[in-house]
Length: 249
Image 1 (spheres, helix red, strand yellow):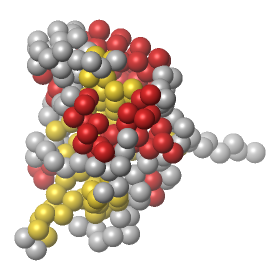
Image 2 (cartoon, one colour):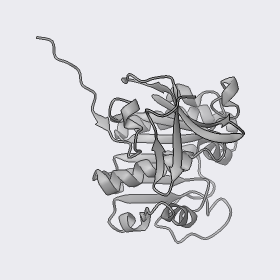
Image 3 (cartoon, helix red, strand yellow):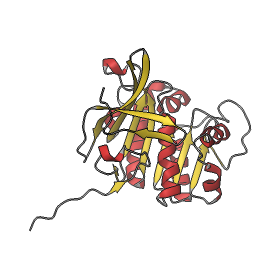
Image 4 (cartoon, one colour):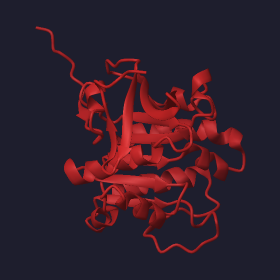
């Protein structure tokens, strides 16, 4: 008798997306979400954590390195996502990684110091994940981690360490990064983020009849059968919605 190996799946909380990846992300995987500015990367990451807490009983951590926690909360209310409610219930923790860098005082519970080295950064995230027993994590974004390091060349080392720690923690994680030129195959700022991640999802735009349309492409997802087509998606008042049977660009 042959035992069939089944992969435990984590639902993304993004309507239509799980149909493309056999029901969800493989448990404990690290997924890189990449795309140009304004493509929806932050929304994708926050939706994953928010829906985890709200619908699947899975606590999550959001590490925000691009905007202050209070701005992020306000922005997400546009989708009807009340992050604060779940923070009070210790189902979501937001790590403010911006205030200290720009020299502002922070009233947040979880704050990254301004002159953090890589080890402290990783240790701190580990601590917050353990504090709320998180199952999901989003780090927005990799270029902002690099920006904090005195030498950007260290980013490779840090990402490898980060990957090891994430696998050890067993959380399912989304890391966001900038895609400088997806049409020419340049889908990450440092050219190596996609190698440490076990999954890569590209969010981008395509011009159709003088209008920009959003599409999503799964470049890689280990332990998962997936198509290499470009699927349309929208950002509406409920967040990101993917159309698996929609017009393929």
